[in-house]
Image (cartoon, rainbow, N blue to C red):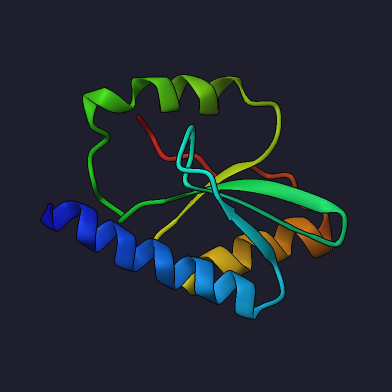
Length: 101
């Protein structure tokens, strides 16, 4: 329960930050946490604290990220999420940020 409450707080902060910066955001939860869009471009975002190990029950998510042809990024703050989303939506960067499994 404590882990879920922490994630909800972090995810809420990220969603609020992205929306305040003008992005459309949908909470999709699976296969990753968020989908964002602006300026005719969209991306997927997983909200996760840095340094956390991937749980074994996240194998389906790892498989999805490996096979997804578009950008999938990870963030651990609203500021980082805004930077990632702006880079893709306004600068056209398709560089994918992946954390080691």
